[in-house]
Amino acid sequence: MLIAGLVIALAAPALAFPVGGSPTTTTLTAGALNGCVQPLTVTVAAGGTPVTSGTVTILDQFEGNSVQLATVALSSSGTASPSVALAAGSHSLTASFPGISGYSASSSSPAIAVSVTTECEFTVAVSNFSPSSSAANTLTLTAGQSGTFTITVAPSVEFTSSLTAPMFVTLSCSSLPDGATCSATPENLEILSTTPESCLSGSPASACPPTSTMVIQTYAASTVKATPPTPPGNRPNPIAWAFLLPGALGLGGLAFGARRRSWLTRLSLVAFVGLVTLLGTTGCNPRYYYEHHGPSANPATPAGTYNVTVTAQSSNGVTAITHSTTFVLVVN
Image (cartoon, rainbow, N blue to C red; front, side, top):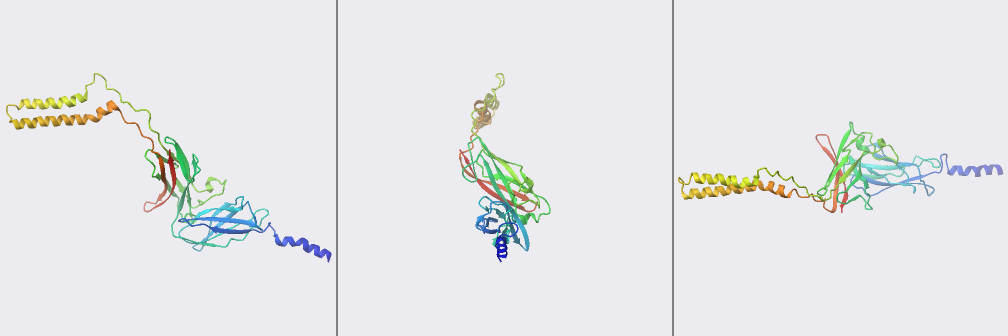
């Protein structure tokens, strides 16, 4: 009896900790839906203790199909906070933990129903601002300085699964202040049917959504005013000719018709000579100003706070798909 009781006592822990490690529980909660982007929080725990390593997988039951949306690493607090882009329609989201050494796999979390009314083929996000700023999605520059940030175009899994050919997305920006420019490298991103919506930290670029680097260039006021070359001394002065030539021709005409024309005709000729002289002077005025004053100095990019829009667009020649995001540009 003693031996039998000892055997039962030793075997008891095995009933609570099946092969594979401690049993785990996975829970899934959803934040407020932002258009077609659904923020999620996944928590994995074993007996109330957070599981701080391993990955969780987000699954979606959509239009009768099971779609794997993302695989995300757990943080040191035992949570993961992915955001997934969903196609328009009704979704049933769950999360699962496959298990790691010391912890067994847990069954899928209770499903969360999400209804999306906004079509979202892909999302556009900006990050990694340089120079960095304490404010989120903000790039702060001094006039004359340039800054960079990363653009990520993340397609929804439901959308890429329907692609039969590569899709190219063109990047651009708008609402920049005067005297500022933007350029993206590369300017066009390719989305394939195998392009993931997200990637794990440390994953190769081929296993992540495509990215581009955008440069914002501002300009400082020019400090040196350009001076035009002085015309050679022996060169005829076009300004003088603008006055003399029309007047000489007009006076010659007056002299020729002095005996044959009435005083009213002569007065008309005098007015005509004055008009021609005025036109000649006006025509030479821009050149005169340029040769004596030169071009004006370039102004700096105006200081201020601007909401800049980054747009990603794809077109098949008939319809265009456009999605965008914004960031704050501060020019000092």
